[in-house]
Length: 321
Image 1 (cartoon, rainbow, N blue to C red):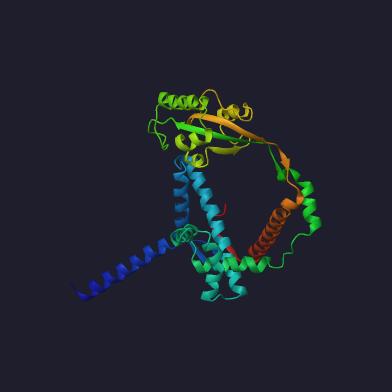
Image 2 (cartoon, helix red, strand yellow):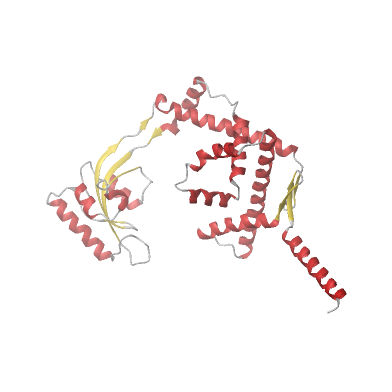
């Protein structure tokens, strides 16, 4: 092959490679001249789409396509906000490696393992250093937010008393036998007849004087309550209707004379006690209110800061309708 032809082929290959690379680097937005590329956006959208699909959301058809476009626009807005935060944080100061670790330490401690922490970083598509800078920025912006005064806390309590009231509660013990033909994924599988007969056998034992809590610990298939003798506390509306109706019809110390069927299976229920509705006193919830008001004030301050930073920034968003 002649040298000129070889050079020509090499030139064409290089140009083709550049063209392919250029296609992968399509700019969808920029923040103060810092570019955001299609591939970075697509990566985050794909991860989000997979998460929604696992929850049963269907992205097929026109409706699905509209949802996807909306998700893409929202995700890009979030990326833009993140870039603004990182830029603003680096204006304040540079973090050393030790400072980065100091900033992310409280966050890391919320995860059961380093593997879970790394998964989180991958999900939010941020490096550990970037997370540290965002936390650093938040601390700096809200550090001068003053705590609410006692008068403000008391006023909030008086204006929002319904937030600090506890509705009537029912403390019960229950024993459950699942109905599952193998398609529900319950920890035990029984036919309707099998589960009902098992429940009726427990009623016979209760009628003979056996202790309900002891039988719940030994026989119940509800792993979340059997370890404490089937004890469960709920308010009306928190549990399935059949269970709630049967439990609230009992008097304290009584148990259901017949098994109670729900979508889970057959239950036996004993009402231990009714806990009356009550209003929590101010002193009991004072710190909770203080934390809530402080958190809201800091969030408002940071939102205002971000809006001002966004207004001053030079932004290009090619997906904005």
